[in-house]
Length: 168
Image (cartoon, rainbow, N blue to C red):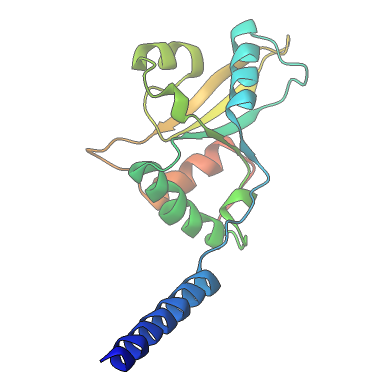
């Protein structure tokens, strides 16, 4: 009886060890992205937008999204992945805009977001343009709506209109 118990324990520990090793071996690795902005960069950008002057007066395109949000994940992983593939890019983060993770802004009212940043819901694609004095103003925004999610063709159209990207 003792022999059966020892053999059973050895078998269970072997199976558990193999399972753990297999899990570790096939676990996904996180790919570092170079142009995903932190909340500090968002606050700096928002302070510059509030001050209405940028040191480098150029147009800027920003994707605002929540981290670990179903809608944001859909837009980035599904739509933008296909758009990047249509452009022949290897990664979504090579597209011509900055990604801003704004999960901490969950409780900011939509009217405040609209008046200060040019959009009212997440995820949102926003194009900012600087005037002669270097003041950034929202020019165009494409906002996600749960009732009517935007499509790949809408994102492509927005990119062609607001960036230098051209699709075939």
